[in-house]
Amino acid sequence: MSTTFTVDFFSTVDGYGMAEGWPGYWGKEGPELIADRVRTFAQEQVLVFGATTFREFRQFVTEYDEPYYDSLNELPKIVFSSTLEEPLGWQNSTVLHEDAVTAIERLKRTTDVPMRSHGSIALNRALLAAGLVDRLEVMMFPAVSGRAGGAGLLHGGAELDLELVESTVLDGRTHKLVYIPHVHGKVPEGVGPQPRKSGGAIADR
Image (cartoon, rainbow, N blue to C red; front, side, top):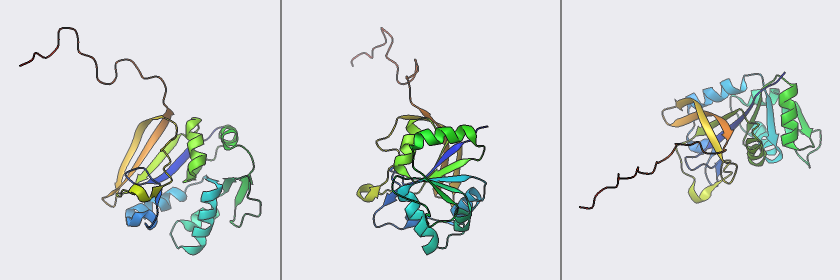
């Protein structure tokens, strides 16, 4: 028995997951993007959160009326936290007071229900570095956050090699990129610019 773990990240072109003073989706949502979210969260899965993202979404689903928020409410949820206690104030939620890397490694071996995590920067950096992420889904919005940006999942984290398995343009502007991530290891021989062979120097003119 085993399952997959997907990291789901909304990003600007410069790699930030949020920006002060910008609206949700950086104001670039459209019908195809929302339909993709509806399809994504209609699937059987367990949602996995860090404490900060859990608190944010627990509030979002009561304040905003997105067409996939009912699915977020109904799906089973796990939150890793050293401070939160049950009851958590969001239905179908369970808190785990343990190391996330150890717990996810165990859950991947002992359950067959796929897991998905949105946002949760510190949590997912650790899982990517540990090689526990099977799919990295990046929804890249046509915006540059610049100095207003924050929550850069891939900034300052592990080095990764990414295998592109899906690429879709939504609403003519937002790119959904799906990768299989691999922790970067030794660089193979013969890749990158190669030195000139002896005797191949360009003559001065």
